[in-house]
Amino acid sequence: MIYDGQLADSYQTQNAPHVTVSENRERSAPFSFGSDGSRSQIDIHKFVAKLKSISGNYSTAKCAKSVRIALQSAGAKIVSHPIAASDWGDTLTKIGYRQIQPEFDHPQKGDIYIIKRTPNHVYGHIAGYSGSQWISDFKQQSYDVYKDNNVTYTYYRPL
Image: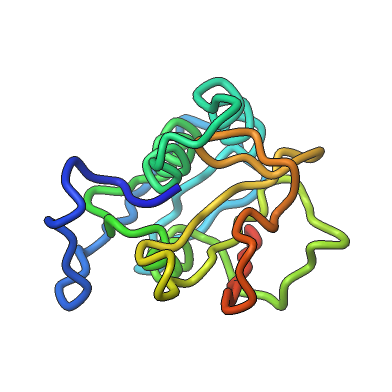
């Protein structure tokens, strides 16, 4: 739920890594995209299946890693990526998601939300919607994983 890296002290906000999106014609998918004009595809069903298969019942503090692995297994071409979950918004928009107003009462399969960092949660959190529940590195009871009044959410939906 915290970060996608080996050491927390290796995190740097100033130099967010560059993400490259490239073409992949081998897979069929519900949507395709490319910030540079190329076509790339993500299969939402594969994204959800992978996320389910690698998540547990309890957090391992690796939500960003779990979401990244699920996206890559579904066709996303992510060469480098941010470590902190809170910093994944730009990466999601580059691979074919668009930011929308939070719709926790009507989530759609493949939606992803990010909890921005707070003083108590310096790396934030990221999770994807399976069609029936929110999943990150663990199967969540709800989207509200932090009992903290200071959290803000950004919400992304596939194009």
